[in-house]
Length: 182
Length: 255
Ligand SMILES: Nc1ncnc2c1ncn2[C@@H]1O[C@H](COP(=O)(O)OP(=O)(O)O)[C@@H](O)[C@H]1O
Ligand SMILES: [Mg+2]
Image (tube, rainbow over all chains, first blue to last red; front, side):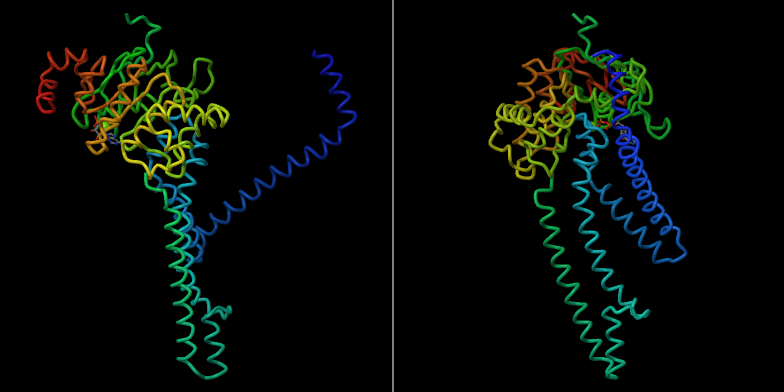
């Protein structure tokens, strides 16, 4: 193969497949790039706006989740990174193969705890009549003029929910940790 | 004897400072490590032994000085070809064994040993498995290939850590107190593996408090204190005819 034939082939291919390259191929490449940048920018902006928000709960949510993920990664022993890098693994390989799989085990239970906390905190949402458990208390109260009974009922439900979920999370966490200590 | 192509690592005036200049972990260390050397580094705690060892594969970035490994100054940002120096390539040729093993807990012993050969060197999984099993056999752990690190004793973990590094076929092995975290009854099995490795001609740099090992297996002993290399010599010279008062004092405490 020499340069002349390569040149001729390129001319031929251009005539026959120009639409494949110029329309389909370039189209996909550009849209993929655009989607990637857009998703990245939207996620980034979302977190950035949440962290700067005037609405305290939004700031709080953003900082909690970034903190959970950040500390989940930082909690992985530095020796793991050193061992991986000393074997010649790149920063990227070390992250994807060694650090993140271990960080997940810190992050998931923390997210689970967060979920349980949020279940309790959503009771505050009833102020806006959103339809959660606490709102149902107000509904029942409005219809029956009974105050204490519906409160006891949802208290039991809240307790059962968080109790069962906490137990499940404990089991899940122990399963995650199996085979984990160095 | 020490012709220039015999030199594997040349360390020149290596310095590592922390907190500006207030902590001089390494204060101008120069030494040549030759092929086949079993260089044992001794010295009191805090004398800079780990910092020295970890600088060799740039786990610590030196403040100044040069480290020439197989002809390349790896402290430079750019390689001899003018392109960005890829430290990962050089690290592949330098195995490292840590005090706390640092096995990957979420991977089996076999996966611990084959991950880097496959992902970094591009070896096929079959070849990597075969090689790993052969290495495990050499340290008497072939039957533990599919176990997870947590299922092993400390001595077994450290033997795995050694063969994990060997699986990359390094030109030099760096050991940072490989037996210090072990129960006393397990120290021997790890030192035996290291001794065998030395007899096979592997170039080794070993930081250890095991003076018996230093005396018996070491070909050269370095004594460090306060970030400086205070004395260097054969085991006989260092242990039987120490010159520096700091070394004499150190030996009187550890022997
Ligand atoms: N990351 C660090 N930050 C500050 N000082 C450090 C750091 N690492 C090591 N040092 C200091 O450098 C000196 C040498 O440490 P090290 O190389 O670990 O000694 P050795 O291994 O001989 O016990 C010690 O005084 C230690 O406290
Ligand atoms: Mg040390």
